[in-house]
Length: 111
Image (cartoon, rainbow, N blue to C red; front, top):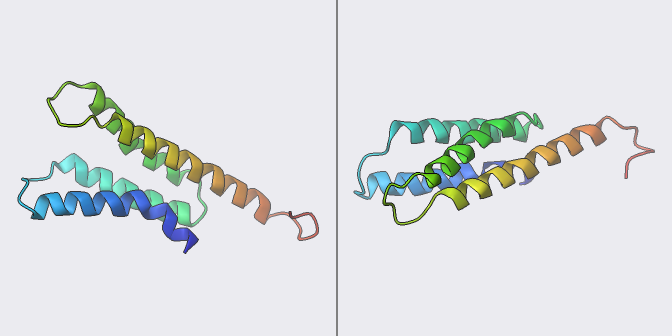
């Protein structure tokens, strides 16, 4: 169950964009497919405690922040979503580093 937590952004955004695509809101931009793939790959790497998988999750977050700075006439700005994604993956990276650091310690010294 703990490993499922690494996939929360990928699951949520896949549901959102899937409903948007099949709900008649129009076509999905190809870059969104790349972002979703990066989020899923990041979840896979993080679930194997490879902290650098979180860096793949930073890419869509940074793109959301950049898109939020552009004036496109959208209803809501993507900046807040990008910040949330970046913070989420930062916490995941710290968790993986902590987990990997403490998994190599002898049982007597573990907390």
